[in-house]
Structure formats: C-alpha cells, structure tokens
Length: 165
Figure (cartoon, helix red, strand yellow):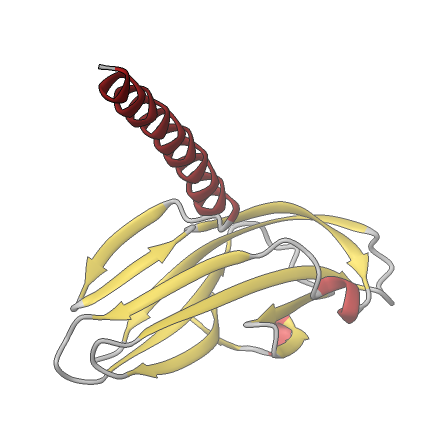
C-alpha cells in the first residue's frame, strides 16, 4: 500500500512539474513571437508569409553599428511549391519624411532608404529566389543617419511581400 501511495505521489509531482514547465515554455514562445513583431500569417502564390505589415515608430540618430543593435521587424517566407519562387520585400511610406533614414536588411545591406529602387511610390528593398520547401527569415532595422540634422523622426511604413512569379 505504501508503494502505491509513493508511486501515486511521484506521478502527481511529475505531472505538476510537467505542467509548470509547459506553462513556462508557452509563455516563452509567445513572448518570442511577440518580440519578432509578427502580426499576420498568410499564404499567397504557394508562399507562407509571416510578417508585421507596419513599421510605425520613432527613430533616433544612431551610428550604423548602433543601428544594427536596434529593434527590428521580422519577415519569414516559406516556399510550399515544387518550383522556385521569386519575391520582393517592399516598403511603402505612409508619411513623407523619408530623408536621412538608414536601413539594414538582414543586418547585411546597410544604406540610406532613398538609395533603394522606387516603384509606384514604394521602395523595393530586396528581391529573392526561394527554392522549394525553403524558408528564409528577413529582418528590417531603421534609424536616422548619425550625421543628420534630424535627431528624431516618426516613421510609418507599410511592409509587403510581392510575389513575382
């Protein structure tokens, strides 16, 4: 009888520990999802896209090194097709204060926003090919050029993934 009670007690303790661990993991994953700024998940042309469709924040003047440490918007694209798909990442300004904005795409390509190609009042900040069943994660960081007269700007952009094929 004592052995049964002991096993029952151990089982209950194990279940409680498992439940607590599961709750902690759920909170952690939820916070990471929120931290990545992903607000919308949708499928288009066989691509699964996870994206925050808006960038609306106050930018400060930073050096490029400091800008690479700033908060970013995340875009995840997965190709669920049997063929390679091409797409573009496009930023459409809502307000017109685009001068002196520096941008990093995937922490590699750093330049003034105005140097990107502009199509239909939108900036094409990247064009990519994605192999079948491949996933690519992109990050967009923005800040004001350290040498700018502006020390703070509120920016408002619509972020979009445009499928080319």
